[in-house]
Image (cartoon, rainbow, N blue to C red; front, side, top):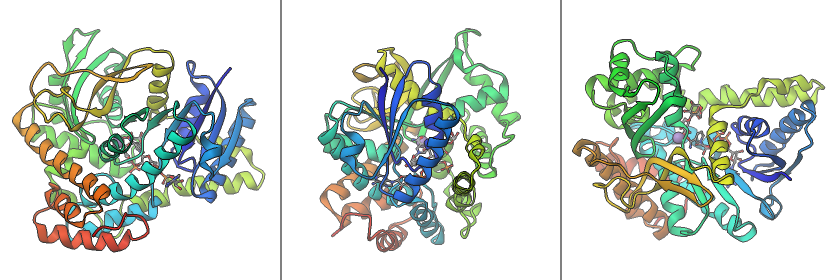
Length: 435
Ligand SMILES: NC(=O)c1ccc[n+]([C@@H]2O[C@H](COP(=O)([O-])OP(=O)(O)OC[C@H]3O[C@@H](n4cnc5c(N)ncnc54)[C@H](O)[C@@H]3O)[C@@H](O)[C@H]2O)c1
Ligand SMILES: O=P(O)(O)OC[C@H]1O[C@H](O[C@H]2[C@H](O)[C@@H](O)[C@@H](O)O[C@@H]2CO)[C@H](O)[C@@H](O)[C@@H]1O
Ligand SMILES: [Mn+2]
């Protein structure tokens, strides 16, 4: 008998990639999929696309769509969560409000990431509350951003929740490095540490080549750059910046998101304040979904053929399969530190390699101390994120302001306060009251 799986944020643009991966996965048999979303229009659209895919593949999988958490989660085995509270319209504000004040405006980094964090915590804590009520034994595989803030918040609100927080960025980087320089990721044992979207590779041991390939890869990144063929221009720009970072900081391969913390000046200068990533997505993948729905409704089921399984989907389903079969496979995951990074504060939430088995994620402790440069900027970021989570639970304006002022993309407390006050007005329907 197959598993029952719910997608929370079922109407999300990443849903087809996750579902197509689920349907093809050899080790994760599914016989019921429930799409749960609080936006019935987006959920209806996705239902139509997935229903069409199932019909074309002649698959006997029950498909349900619902806005009712009792229907979504009662009797469910696994929940793949990917909420975007406030949807793309609020992401646009997260990006544009800070940029208007010449500071980084981004989905998960800088003050835009903090604004998203305050929205996301509210929606996500509510979601985990429903899961505790209707399916306390189900595993939640979470992609909802900003991941470090969500992970910190959930462990405070529901310390016993069965949740794994994952980010696809490290596999995307590794796949790109393999494609660019001819390595095989199946042979890699990468050691990576950091916070989410804020970390570094320490080494990449290749079991075929029998050596740490990171030094030679850094050299290639510095001299040749990576292969950005076929990428959207904004992602190509990000990966080119990742190579640029290795010229200034040649000891490690960085997470590409460090561009926002190390070079906020460049990121602002290179942004179009009137047309940001949210606009690209609304004009891109969200339109593609609407067009597919229109075509299917007009009688063309082949319009569902444009969706494919993705690395993003594969990563999260592989994690679920490792739980299901107690495989102890290795993934980068976002977990309480508790010694995994020995010389970083123990109560941080960090991203490190972990084994995943039937009991969840078991972090692998680093066998070295991280350098002071990384430790220093990580600790400032951890403190800022923790204060933001405090602000959420205590409904404290002062804590939110201090978190904003400590964010390393911010030059002074005046800017932090101005941007906070504008974001507060823009988010009046989404944030807890701060006073
Ligand atoms: N962790 C990672 O590495 C990673 C990778 C990609 C995307 N993401 C995250 O996944 C999420 C989805 O991304 P997307 O671009 O596909 O988003 P999207 O905007 O296309 O869809 C998000 C969906 O969430 C729904 N939603 C919002 N609040 C909800 C709530 N309270 N309850 C139920 N549903 C709710 C929306 O109605 C929408 O249908 C985002 O949080 C994004 O940041 C994370
Ligand atoms: O700007 P977006 O919404 O396209 O992407 C933001 C997300 O970017 C990362 O995930 C990427 C991934 O790195 C890429 O290779 C491909 O698989 O798409 C993913 C989603 O677009 C990042 O890890 C996420 O946290 C961001 O939400
Ligand atoms: Mn991520």
